[in-house]
Image: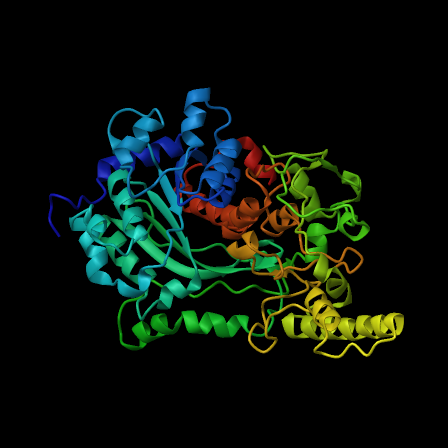
Length: 512
């Protein structure tokens, strides 16, 4: 690497930023690829302070600004609420836009974020090292290696701590272990670095969502990197362990070959000391029922997030999780929610009602066929005609009753949640359909609402999502669960300040 472009962490700068923290000042975080702000939410709750974000999606950028930058002057708030292309804005220009003058490396203590992984399959150590030598190398690469831009921001801003999040497949993406290779670069920059897999369900989130997390801390501060211990336990369903092992294949191969790995085995939840996992019913049971769609009161069209749905239960009647969702410091809500809206799916309400907890698309399809047979029988009696498969009435009724997907090819397309278990992983395609999370309450016969999706991601009810229903679903599906983000932030804070000082700002963080 050339000295001209690669600049390791200066010890004096590390000492300066660390001393500021030890004096009781909140560590300043910058959220890259921020989405609506799951990481920002968790870090702020743990005593950090977001100074801003970089987010390409306009709706998500507005959501982030509304929730974290609303105290800024109008013109500065408008800047935060504007989408930003990380490939076009340099760290120095970003700091100036935030109103932060002086050297670019003076303003950020912690960088967090989850760079997209689309190009990981074709990138290895050589490309990662190239960004350190040539920070603009990514501009000549049409594959859009945005995580290289993430490393460029780290190289320019010189944070003393880093959190990177991504899907588990990043550990074995086209034969590359991108987390391992990233740790090599960060180590040369002057960080202690480790990565692991964490499942949100073990940290009080009512959702089984596994992701890779990488923590790096300036070597002058941390002798080793550790990860938070689980607070909750569940006997995971079949399939999760197998998925984890596929992701870890490259890690295991490195260990067998004798390479030094930065991988840390995922912490194990102890059923004797951990709380039971938070269930879907724990998370959603206090929210008002939605039945208007079954009464003909719902029409097709865009759903705005501006109609208040009052709470139907008093705070005194809530379980601890629901209480937290209404009382999260800085996001308190004792009135109701404006995003408790659902998709218009009239063909499928009767199918949803018949589905059993845990049923997936093959079972849903069978329920639909049975429903069709009942309806065609009634129609034959009413008309006195045979109505065979070639008749128009038969075909029209089939189309109006049975979903068109092949039951043998789309087993996971639909799934009805189980009330007494955490939800399965929420995905970004919630912005296109919600069949992966059909509400467990058959009397409501529907997919989950935007607010219910937010609850399953541990976003408090006072957190505001901008845009209409589809963009809001997408924002939530892409987010890092807030309670897992907080657990990581708490643990990073402890590693940054261990044996020095307890966090003092913001005070409210203690009650989350």
